[in-house]
Image 1 (tube, helix red, strand yellow):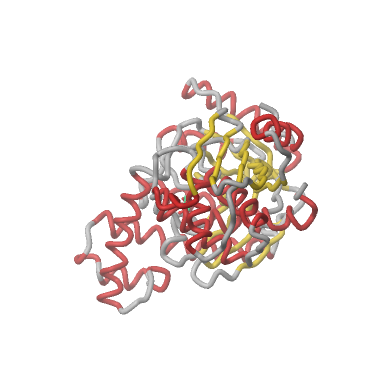
Image 2 (spheres, rainbow, N blue to C red; image 1 turned 90 degrees about the vertical axis):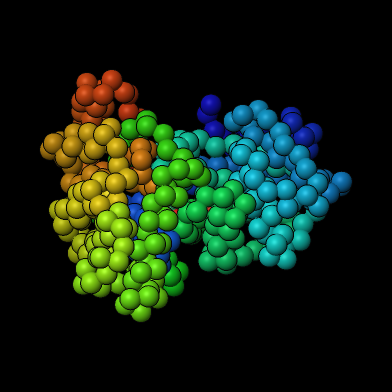
Length: 390
Ligand code: GLA
């Protein structure tokens, strides 16, 4: 399905019999800083040019109707039943956002909303944050409110954590809302301060989808988070750190006997990853892409060995990428257990890189990988400011 503003506007009118206002939110890819965002750590994502479009119009009867153009399906319920909780359905994401905004005291009447998106699902590119932020922008317009970036991201994250029940950090919602074109964002997930960093013109960010699906709402992501939090609790008690973010490798070593080997390894990944993000920022500021690439490779090894969050197909994809002449760095991106790799590739060799990776990955696994050559895109707030609202 080709995603155009007109197609979604028309779908909304056909379905609800009235025109609506249009909002959009991109997807994201994380360049480095994985699984650091729920212990106050550092991340470096950028928004990418996939999107969720939300078209909204008011209705008189105080009901909330969510129509998915992708699934051709509508869910409708009363404003009063916002406490209905998770249904295990796609509508949990936008309904959770309505719930979270309402809980914050933001008042709105009934609405019809159409959602349509082209973000690959289960690929680690934040399809869920994209839906959440697009829905939030749309609902906020009805209540004639605006929210600053940190608040908008925090409320969308709350929808995902408390309504959908996925224990994710704040990276995705923050960058999907607040990204700026041509820049990566280094975000401190504790203070929510961030730096916008340029990528050199002569490199491209290439995303390769292993086609192995992952789901943040279930399973391994939550297990990893529990292991990390168990390790953090020991460090808090023994070393007096406020968050894992504040712990050093020496602190962790001193506590080794008091935590499980899994917690030890997960915490080691996070402590070293935070350091790698700082070094990656310096590398970008100095346009030292070989250094940036080395840090990505180390980050992948750490995700694979210490965090145990990669899988055979993704490791194969990284190995293949690193064999290509134009490849500067490659690693798994996102929550893990499948999904995509992110690669920094010389611009002049990006097309050749894509062909070679697809060919060699198909030979090795019999799977056709989707690949995308990306540039850092605008987040939802910048899009709205530049006239993304129609
Ligand atoms: C998912 C979560 C994020 C983050 C990443 C891992 O995308 O939604 O909050 O934890 O995994 O870095």
